[in-house]
Amino acid sequence: MIQCLSKAPKLTPLSSSLVLITTSNRQYSILQSNHHYPKNTFSNSFNSNNNGNYCCSSFSTRRQFNKSPNGDRSLSAVAATLPDLSPTTHHVPRSEKFMLILGKPGGGKGTISKKIIADFPNIQHFSTGDLLRQHVRNQDDDIGREAKAYMDAGDLVPDDLIIRLVMDDAMDVIHNGKNILLDGFPRTLEQAWHLDEYVHVDVVVDLNIPNDTIVERIADRWIHPASGRVYNYSYNPPLTYGKDDETGDDLVQREDDKPEIVRRRLEAHDKVTAPMIEYYDQKGVLKKFHGTMSDVIYPQVKQWLNEEGC
Image (cartoon, rainbow, N blue to C red; front, side):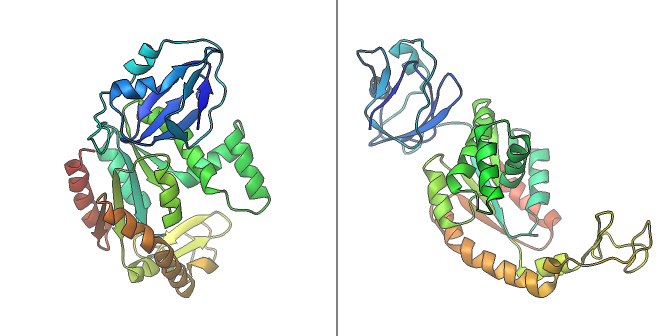
C-alpha cells in the first residue's frame, strides 16, 4: 500500500518491523515493513513523487495518515531521524519501554502501580479507564467525542479506539524518553494481538493473587451511601461496628461486593485473561508475582523491573 504526505514525517522505530510516523500536525500512523531494513534502505522507502509528496511503498499501513500542512523536507532529513537499523536485529534498540500491569479486580494493581511510579520516576502510569473518562469529560478532541457516542448508545468502546486513546497520550511521554506502564488494557488475547499491531510490549507484570484473598478483601468493604465514605474491616474499620464514624448511620455493602458475586466475577476474569497471560509468557516478557500482601509482593516486582532496566 502506498501512503503519501506533503511533508516528511518524524519516524520512531518501535520494533524491527514497526515504525511510528508522526506528522507535523501531530497525527500518528503505524507502518509495518515486509522485512527488516538497514538505515539507508529504510529512508529510501520514502520517495518524492511528481507532486512533491513523500510516498511510502515498502510498508503496509496500520493507521491512515492525515494530510499534513504543505512544506517539504529533504530525504536526508528523514534519514537523519532514524537510528542505525540492522537487518539481523530482532528489535530496534531503544531505551523507552512499553509495559503492562495485569491483575484481577481488587488484586492490588493500583497499590503496586503507585509504588512503582514512586520508585521509578522514569515510568509514567496510564490507566485506560482514567484516560477514557478524561477524554469523554473534556470532549475537546475527536477521540473523546467518538468514545462518548459509543457510551451514550450503551455500546462498548471498540479496541481500536482505546488503543488510539492510549497512543495519543503515551507517544509524547515516549518521545520524552520515559517508560509507559499501561493498566486496564489489554484484557483478552484478541486485544493483545491488536495492541501488537501498534507497539512492542517489553515488560508485563502479572499480579497473581488468590481469589479467596480478593473475595475476603472486597467482602470486608462497607460504605456510607450518603457520603461515599468507604470502610474496610481488614485495615480501615469504623469506630463502631456497622456504623459511620461521623453520622452514626448504618453502613451497607454494595450488591456487587457480596462474596458470591465477587467469586463469579473473578472466575469469569480468569477464564477470559488466561490465554492472554499465556501469550505474553510464551513471548518471554511476562513475570508472575504470587502472594497475598502488596508489601511482600512489591519488593520482588521492584527487583525484576531493575533487572529489566526500567
